[in-house]
Amino acid sequence: MVVKFFSNKKGGSVKALDYLLNHREKDGTARVLIGDEQLTRNIINSISFKHKVCVGCLSFEEQNIDEDLKYKLMGDFEKYLLPSLESDQYNILWVEHTDKGRLELNFVIPKIELTRKIALNPFYHKQDLSRVDVWQNLTNLTHGFTDPKDPAKERTLQGASKKISLQKDYEKLDEMLHELVKNGQIQNRDQMIELLNENGIFVNRVGSDYISLKLPDSKKARRYKGGIYSEQFTSLAEFERICENTKSRIDEYNRRDTQREIRFYTNKLNEYTERKAEYIQSKYPRRVESKKQIPVDNNGSNESNNFDYNNDILFPNSKSNAKFTNLASTFRFTVCGAESKVHQSTNEGSNTKPRQINNIYKDKGVKNDSTRATTKSGITKEREAKYRAYRKAGKTRDGVYKQVTADAENLRVKLGEYCGEQQRVKQSIISKIANIGRIIAKLVNKLKIKMDSLNIGEVIKENFDLVETITKNTKRIKK
Image (cartoon, rainbow, N blue to C red; front, side, top):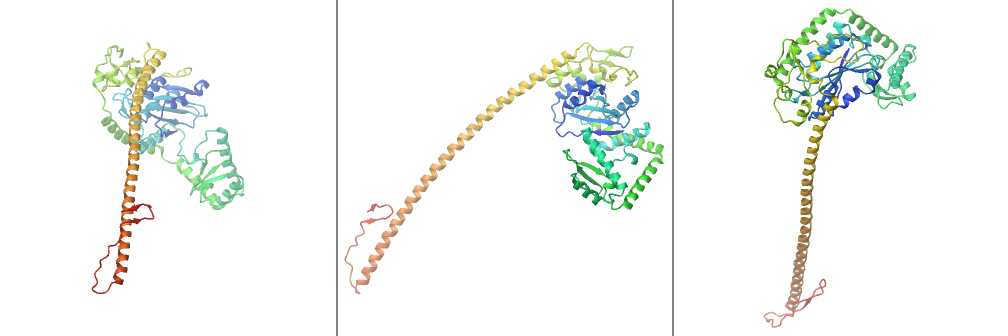
């Protein structure tokens, strides 16, 4: 068994539920084990955060396991993933898949803490990976599930293709290459890469212990790791040494002290869980006073008619949140005084086994159609109000934009007029200076001629005629 958390860069949506409960549900290869699909869907739709949902699965190599054991594993996983959180502080949906010929227990967790309607991230990779990995190892050892860390289970072909036919082609290629190595037709990795290229199989990338190959009909390359795909495969003798090392690792794995490992993983899991529980208690403190308002009869349970679900449990800090009030008002619930067991029935004919601790979200008097209509109506009205506000703000932005554009155009025109006027003034001044220069040059020339013709002591008695000057540029007479 291996625990997988699916990456979702866009934050997730109800499409995760659509995928888990698509045609598989009609085919009988998918069923809800724990939770309420419609409730989970409504909560996800009501979340205003970008990151809305956490999705993952417990993937088994076994085709199926005992029904009671499934519920025990799901309960343990929730306990160690979100320690110290009560069942009414978060929502989870468990969906079983058997369409791949093996068992998958898929889970969907809306990323919101229900009592305070604040963000809740069930899994931080750096903080929670060690704890989840320890729980996975301990569970595999305790129940004897196939361990993905078993050297005998190591696969050279990494990942899986969505197309079954394409997946089989990649697996067949892996088998064929190993067969060619055993027959001596391929003696090292370089020779294998050359053979692949000659046969139209694109070698996308080559690493120290892997190569990535892409078949002609495939959109993405697939990675083959270890063994003959490692750079250590330089000869057939080296390949035999690699096989011997693998065999020795398998023998060592089978001879290990499993009881010692169980004690080690148990201590580690308790240590990690206590640390996580302290963090959760500090960030999501439990509202104890809400429990005191729930009357419980002598039988251990009672349907509360005076209990305010909106104010006391789901959203104690806000009575006017439209997104969740519409959702919460459609549900009444039953509160159990004694701690209920997760599952006791072993009826194989039942397709689903409802989770008893989640019965607080269900009301036999409310039909699904009414629930959906009420929730949809509230969400639609809020979206319409937001859209009207957005349109109004858009008109304001358009008016401001037009005003700024008009002001910029007027400024450009005025700047052009000013520059043109300044250019004309500049040309006029230059023209006047040029005319004065020509007059002075003419005066100097006449003075020079007159001075050359004068004798010493002779007085100048002539007047110079400089009244009229014709310029070549303007063709105008200056006086």
